[in-house]
Figure 1 (tube, rainbow, N blue to C red):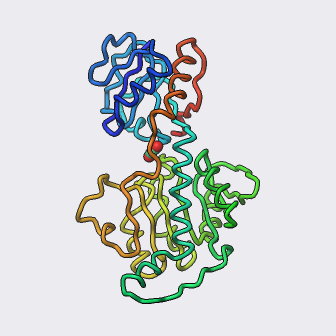
Figure 2: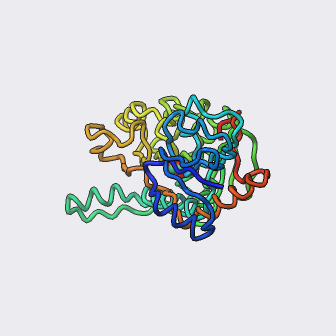
Figure 3: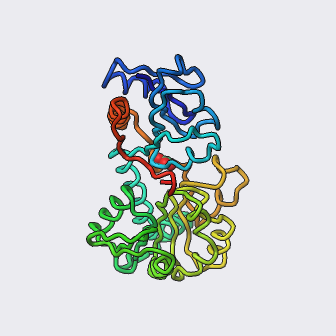
Length: 309
Ligand code: GLV
């Protein structure tokens, strides 16, 4: 019963220790050394090289090291009929909620304007606007979207959410489908993208979507760079329609040093760090899933390959 670890972004030693502390019997191999390929039952992956999961005759689960699974579906030589699971980890969710709340509050209290005035040594009092003037729209309402929505509702924001299929959720107004998308955008002073990346959500944040947002709206993208057309965002900010953006994800990562986002006064850039998987927190879920598939049971947090998340 072994795990094959494939990731350049995560630390294999940390993972090995975290897994061994829960079950020292479990084998742990770091790609490209898969040990005895027939022993591998779970591949624990983040952006694995295409084809790396072939030749594992007893592979029972492809477990993402992150909340997203789009990186797995990019492999055109993915083994057929092996279930795929995303990571749903309380620590990762908490980090995402923390990060998005930081961005929302920063925009709501106009930290950008306050900081601009500070740099000019200008004692300029920018009065707080009523919280009801910062209507928040959340695109994608899975585990992280719901947790974020609840936190923002508790802070007093008026929150609405949009999903592909209809959903209802307590204090958060819900929209779905393409009509719902337009309605949500029209009422979002702060728009947060937390969508999974699939063909239908690629490029969803484009010139048309930005034009539908109210004047002065603000865009926060913590999902994937490919959700957003970067040139369209720049144009919408530079023509004064949007007040700015806070971005953690980009089309090309690392963001090239000559990219206009870096020095843009109205754009906050962070290097894809909103939520980072912590081995000591997430290892128990991986072990649990390994044990389930080992005895032929269904693992937790499976994704539907026909939908892509
Ligand atoms: C990070 O981007 C993740 O999918 O967890």
